Structures are given as structure tokens and as C-alpha cells.
Length: 384
Ligand SMILES: [Zn+2]
Ligand SMILES: [Zn+2]
Image (cartoon, rainbow, N blue to C red; front, side):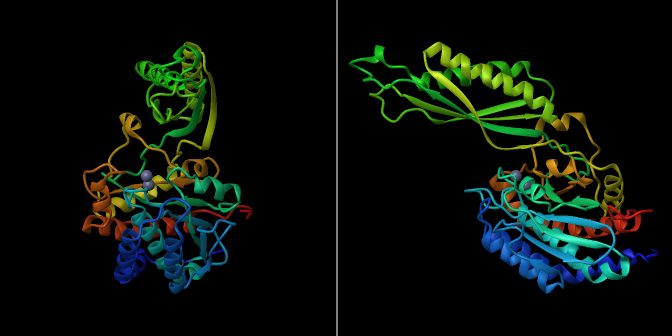
């Protein structure tokens, strides 16, 4: 099949034409933040925008109430552009997912009229619950990424970066069980579950200096008794482990288990470690996608930072990591100010003129990269 790629200039001017609607979309999402799995308004707003841009929209999709799928094109390589739109409880869009969603929707809207003539397919996939809910892991299980030649998103950050690392991450609850007793009249007959949890917390803390590069254990005490005149019979730690790879998480799981047993042993309580939520795998960046993105980012006048092994020490995690083990993926970051995500300053930046620039540059960047995939890759299953 011979296809004529539409000139890149067409896509750039399409994004410029779409700019007022895209910025209104980004600001609207920013002004109405919704937490993971509760993104009803946001998913409807995005679906309406994409339908208005000529894509065929399904909402809900894959049996998830706040997921959607918007498609353009009927043949050729399929690229999935991920729209994230969940916010952080109490912080609004402190991870800037309004920018992620508007950039992906903008790229899909710019590409939609060209898909037929260019011989490619694009899907704007509404992926709920990135913040801890593992929405993309659920979507992957439900075949939302089947047959994709690539899956992409752009995410705001403190600097421009094509190959930002994302660590594997797992969460668990450590449950301690003791025996309640009157704290003054019969303390000796009690078994203090709070003491067990504190002991385990300290054991985790003292192990930190021995962790490997990029390994991290963080914990909070979420339950530890209700009244100071009763020996607490129940306590719970929530623990999160991160490592450069999923295999590295196993060593940390062993550390969590030993710390839990140590707390239980010292206090005569029992302990149980229960996995919580899904394991986020480390992100693998596809080399060819990264090369395209790097080139287009420079053309946009941005200066992507080179990869540095030290970046792993402060890397977060993403549910796109799991997708990246199945489908070629890239997750570039666009600078919106020298602030770290998950802060009030980042929430402000995500709705600022710098956030707006990231929406428009992000839409252009994604659209140009999709064009490269359309031009260079055959759809899965098609013989060459
Ligand atoms: Zn986040
Ligand atoms: Zn995020």
C-alpha cells in the first residue's frame, strides 16, 4: 500500500486552529478536578470534544464507567494516545492531567481529518485512575491496547525530557493483631498492636541505608488504636515500595515481610502482609518513538534533557509502564515550571500560560510522532 503522508505543516496549523478550544478544554478540566474512578464530568467533556472533532466515540468503554475510546481512520497502523484526567484528592490537578488529556485530545483532533488519506488509525483512549488505580492496567487486561503499533502520552513536568524513567511500584497493607486490655488496670494481659506497627516502621526505616540504587520504601501508619486507655488490638501500616524493575520489588517485599515479623515478634502480636492495588511495572521507552519525539521537540524550540542515571532516584511510577511491556510506548515530559508534581505549585502551573504552552506543544508533538508511526510501521498482523 502506498500512502502519502500529509505535510507536517498541515498538522502544525491544525493545532493552531484548534488552540482556543483545546485551552478551554484544559482549563475546564483543571477547574473541575475529579479523583480516580470518579472522573464522570471530565470523561464526558473530553468525549464531547472528540465527537465534535469528528472522531467516533464510545463512552463508557471496556466496561469502565469513566473510560472512553475515540477513533479515527479505518486501516493502517494504530496509535493509541492516552488521555489521563484524574486529579489528586485535596490538591486538584496537582499532577497536571488536564494537560495530558487536552494534548492527547488535540493531537487526535488534528489527525482525524488526515487519517483516511494518510492510511493510519488513531485512538484517543480515555484512561481513568492513573493515580494509584492502575486504570491502564485494567484497560490492558480488557484488550484496549490490542493491535496498537504504539501508545503515547505527554505529561507536564519540571523540564523537557523524552526518556524520563518511571520505577516499578507496589503497595501493601501490613496488618498487626494484638489483644485489647485496660491500659491502666491490666496492661500486662494486652498485646500492643500499635507497638508492633511502630517497631516494624522503624525496622523499615533502619533498612533504608542498605537499599540499592533507585530502591525506596515509604510507609504511613493508618490505624493504631482508638483510645489511650485501651491497649490497641489492631494496627495497620500502608507501605509502598519502588525499584528500577519489577524484579527489584521482590527483594523489597522480603524486607517488608521481615520487618512485619520483627514487629510482631517483639510484641507478641501477629502480622500479615496483604498486597494492595496493582503492581506498576517500570516504563520501557521505545527507541524509535524516542528518536521521533526528540527531533520534534527540538523543532518546537524545546531542549529535552539528556537521560541521567540519577533521575531514577526521584522517579515516580506510571500505569503506562505495564503497557510498555506489551506495546511500544513513550511518555515524554514537557516543562511547565521548575516545580515538582503533586504540589499546590504544580496545580497552579498546570492551569498557567506555561501549562497552556505544554498543551499546544504536546498536541503538536504527539501528532507529528503519530505521523512518523503511520509512515514507518505496518499494523500488527499485516504481512510485509
Ligand atoms: Zn501523579
Ligand atoms: Zn501524572
